[in-house]
Length: 499
Figure (cartoon, rainbow, N blue to C red):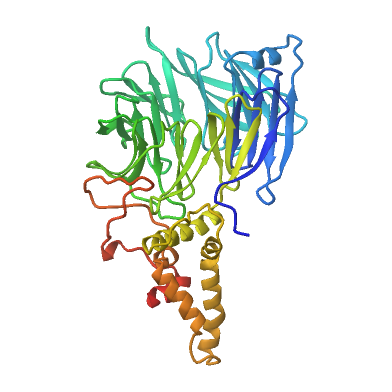
């Protein structure tokens, strides 16, 4: 039987509630928290990466007897958020935050910031050294707060960081990847840079024309995309003087954006990054340098993109009812998954896969996606491409087929055969390598699989040229010079010589 495709439906987390209002995930502990405001139900799940089993860690059911906790959960528009460490969950409803500790036998605690409703809450991306503490940033229409939650001993230390002027109100807050800075946006064209350590305002910069509604920090640098949606976007960076400086402008609509890099690659120097963003019609990849932003790959979109993020070596596009994976190495569409109902939200747990909630559903759906499965899929996609050019039709990466089973296991088969024969040839037990290994090696070369095996994963790259597009993939990579060629992995150096 062939191996399952890269996306496999694992299971649903049945919450036995009429409808899930909100959910969140934590990749460090593989926790999933769900909230149902109708019957005052909060549940913490743990998913095992070994056997893909789910267990209940903690659940809170509040009786609707008029208590503050019940009133908090019943407010319209409530949502739940899980801290970076996975130790705390927060239910935000109206002007209150209900904090929970994700451990058995604990009780929630409530914090009221002001009389105004809380419109956003963002946990600090760097966990505290004290597992009982978690830092968060929250905004109301008029104020930015940064606070520390400490449970089970109820301690809240909250600072008022910024108060809006008359006719000004807060619209969003975003932490940088290292938690050194926060971006605060308002309904004006002013963008505020806040220090994440001292909780003080560092700098205010003017955004051109229309107020931005989205900020996307690069996790490994101090670059940030500030998007005004259909009115375009700007790229800014934090200077050594702790000032936010706009360096580039993107003149077309930028609805979603994500900085991209492949796992295991060396740190990319500042201003030599890659950015993916979606317009209303296409998805673009571009180089970002200190001098310019250069689009180099484009693909038509199946619909409006709601979420855009990287998962391992793939770029993930979430539309209204589908999840699409594109390879960051080749640009091929690896696989897509259609859902029967509109998607509410998709999150990724690195060791598990994608966690999906559909609008109006009482279930959380888990789709398996791992790097091991993706590595097999890389061989399949390349092999099908070459065989297709040779005239083989009717086979794709999800069709059950004996050829797919062979391609998915070809890399392991080839390396194990060489590892078996190499010591015997070196010790003169064998005069030469077997015809079988020569046949496997020749097939590897003919299918153009050698670059996939001999070199580490590489991002799409090209010299600045006119954009190209194809229905299923980004445009092909441009040739690279000898100085740009990546180093060959030692265990595959023999295959590189054979090629």
